[in-house]
Length: 409
Image (cartoon, rainbow, N blue to C red):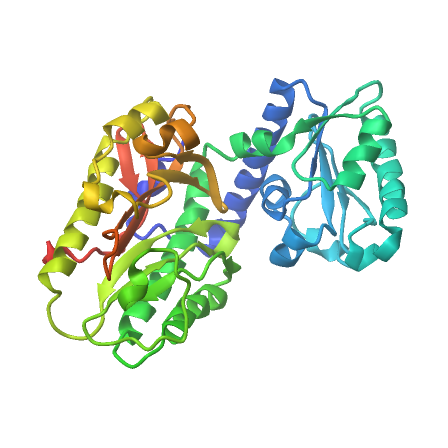
């Protein structure tokens, strides 16, 4: 696992060692995919999800756009061979990755690309997929797939291919982070911290939520980051309930200001930090301090509880008990995995276990976000906090030094 880089207080990536780290990470991640294929006796996996493609190969091309438009895809075989169908005139995105990849031209059958010829295009696509699969895995029938539209599914099944849920395989492959992955995640987190610090400097009455949020985007892009998954920043009465995305609302003195970074930064790794601040000079009200102290207590109680070997259900049952008046507006989960984006697992509250819970076990090397939202049902303000951590042999270790409002406690 990961422990060495935790002794580096800055968790920085030196330029001279970056390429070596990337080589280690690429090898580790591809091996993790191969291990899952071998475990499930599956000869290959077809990947469309840009995050899964990035994990397996470190190649990236218009990730947000390709997340909506299935225009590039790869097939990874259990022996490590990779076939990539790369977007138009984009073979160069594979340069410098050190991957032995066979590049082909993709076929897309979305209505945007194919119009009313979608089914015919899907048949052309399917014939190519079947040909490659049978060439490299003769006599095999099982193919894992992370995403596939109905026309594609129908063609492969009609032509003797049995499909396996590839998303489950990839989430499991992504679960345990290597030491190199944690270094790269640290670079993303340091970028997020720069964005948060910039937001803090710009925080003042009279600025809009959108203006403030732009500072995080600015620092992310200028440091080589990629995108931000949500726009979760809210102020004043928009902090309760949670899940208001930022708007043109003008911040007022005395408002609470809460945000959740959800930032895919440098190297494609996610930084997921939530903090709540006070707008303007002065002290928070008694109610604001109470909300904050409860959220702070929830996060830190659950961080202290979390340890390798604990089951998801045990963690849910032993987690900090939310007072009754805040239960309705609770956050959607107690904690969730984090890597390139939000990842498996998502840990349900005990009150939601019957409808949303599933069991598993925390392991050394997992990276997790511990969550809290405290806002009363019918209240006018709330506090959102979240801390990104790694599980080591010795317990739960924070991956960010982004400060809390300790003087509110």
